[in-house]
Structures are given as structure tokens and as C-alpha cells.
Length: 335
Image 1 (cartoon, rainbow, N blue to C red):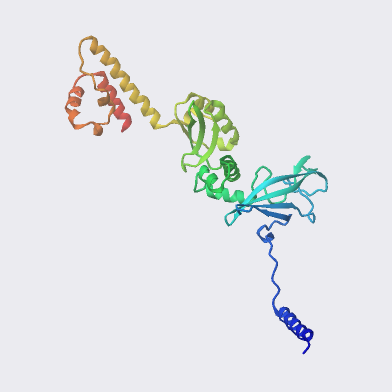
Image 2: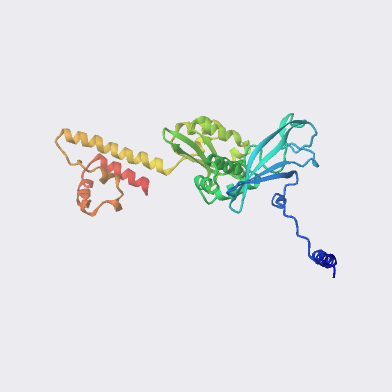
């Protein structure tokens, strides 16, 4: 039999066998980026597999739109590009080299970045990456999130701040009846924040820079007249700038300001110690040292006085001393 004839039979059978096999589907990375306004045109993976770079361009089937107001326009000002971090693919960090347009927006009256529905104009990460960062910040510190994702801590902080302002940036002043005003120190050197709370629920409703009168005035200026009239009491410490600001903005403020018990008791305790010091100096001039070393006997509550000092305390209390009367007044305020 001719060898060429046999070869033809083999080739024919192999062709029929191949025609019966299902065609292999083509692989694509596009399904991992379901953003309709972009196209992925190129990909590069570093040999170590630690980073993957994708080239992204706008899909010209869609008319560019303003990221501020959403209005569409054909007026393109210029083209630019930005490197953007996306969610990891397995253990590989994914970066997008995104090309996009700056456009003239007639509604906003300015040149703006087109909205590709991919990234926020002021972040170097995609929207889904930013949401992931914020979700981690709920259970981890900023530094831990930055180390985990290999991001700068300032980037993590700004992303978390953006979401928090979006959720809590607009305060709700409805239904306020009792307020509490206090300050917290944020760093050394007398750096303070003024904090306003709903006294009934404990909810923080407003925070302002510093602890000056104008800080509290700024808060009161945000309230409507009806909301101010509904306030029944404002608890605060005896800080003069807070008192002055409240008297300016709140009707009948003198009847509504309530000093918190801690600061009132602090003044009472200091007054008792002041009386003790004056009386001790007067007795020392007469050569009497009976009040020497008795400072805390007058400041402690009776249940906190050590047993071995009760005899001394009972003896001093039986004497006609000014500090005894001052302590009696302190106990009256306590109970």
C-alpha cells in the first residue's frame, strides 16, 4: 500500500477527532473589574508575582460625565493619568495605570475630572479598596491596617475619615433636651477639643476646636430658635468662656446652666484643705501641732479612714476646730 495513502488516512482521522473536542474558552481578567466606563488594554506582571499592573482607559462608548454633579459633556479639556491601588488578587498587589479626561462642566462652571465610577478624585485607591480599608478600620488601628495592606498610614487615616464624615458629618440636633459640655486634651501643650453630648443618650453630637467662648458660640449658632428654646439644662464645668457663650445664645441661660458635681465637689474639698492650712498656721504660732499630718483625715470619707487613725480622728472631731465645721459642710454636699 502506498505510504502517502496511509498518511492521508491518519491525517483525516485525526482531523475528525479534533473536530469532536470542545473548544477551549479564552481567559480574561475583565470580569474581575465590572466597571462599565473603563476598558483594560494591557497587563504586566512582575517576575516575582508580587505586583500586577493594568492599563485602564475610558470606554468611549460612554459620554464623559462630571464627578461632582453627574452631568454629561463632550467638552474635553485634557488627558491625564494616575496610578491607583486596587484590591489584591490572591497575594498579588494590583495597580491600575488609569488614563482619564479632565472636562469642562457647564453646570459646575469649572474643569473637573470625569467620573469613571472607579475611584474617588482625591484618593489613590479604587472605591472598593477604600471601602475595604474603612471596614478594617472598624476593628483594627490605622497603623495595623496600613501594615496589613502595605499602604501609607496617612492614606488609611484619610480614607477612614472620609467615610466617617459621610456617615456622621451632618449632626442631628432634633429632640435635644439636656446637653453636656466638656473638653478633652488631644496632646500636650494645652491642645483641647470641645465636646457636646446629648446627656440622656450619651451621644456625641458636635466637636469643636479649642475650648474658647467662640467654640461654643459656633455650636449654638447651628441650632434653630426652636431647638434652643427646648433645651432644659446644660451641664458644664465652671469654665468662664463656656458660661459666657451660653449666656449670649441661650434664653434664660442662668436658669439652665448646671455645674457638674465633680467640679463642685472639687471646690468644696479644696475649701476644706484651705481652712485646715490657715488654722494649722494659726495654731503653730501658738506652739500647737495638733493638726500636723492630718490633711487626709479631713479629705477622706469616713468609710475610707484607716482603722488605726480612727482614734485620732474622733479626738480631733470632738474639739472646737474650724476645719471640723468645714468638713461637716463637705459631708453635707456628699450626701
